[in-house]
Image (cartoon, rainbow, N blue to C red):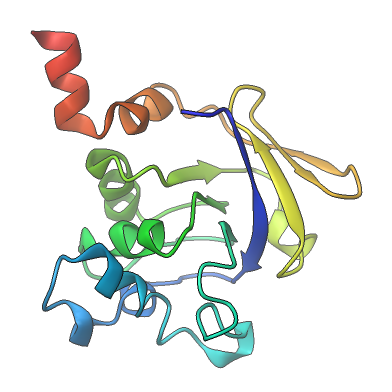
Length: 171
């Protein structure tokens, strides 16, 4: 997988729970495209529209504050976001179950933590460049933020998830 992710940011706040990421009424399927059509459907309107006719797949990077992915444990959340075109979520912290579901499923959606309050310095629609090797996020104006080291997570995601990773390394 590539070490560089480029795309537009969609900025949200604290405690974005899995009901906002993919509402329970759409959990009758595991079809990624159906889930993608309903990703962030119940997000507070103060953040704007994540998905609509003009913005379908417009945002490749979600920037959040604390506790992204809290709430019900559902593997549908990273599936829906990945199918909607999201390549990474940058947050100060993640709910552990969302973080693990992102890694275990190998959906090529990177959960990246930062110690900086980047959500206050990035606006929805801004172009970002994430360097997974250097562990940095750069805005189009050159302002750069550091990401926390995420150990073997990139390799697990790049392998296609935890099962694929274990098969590759333990057989």
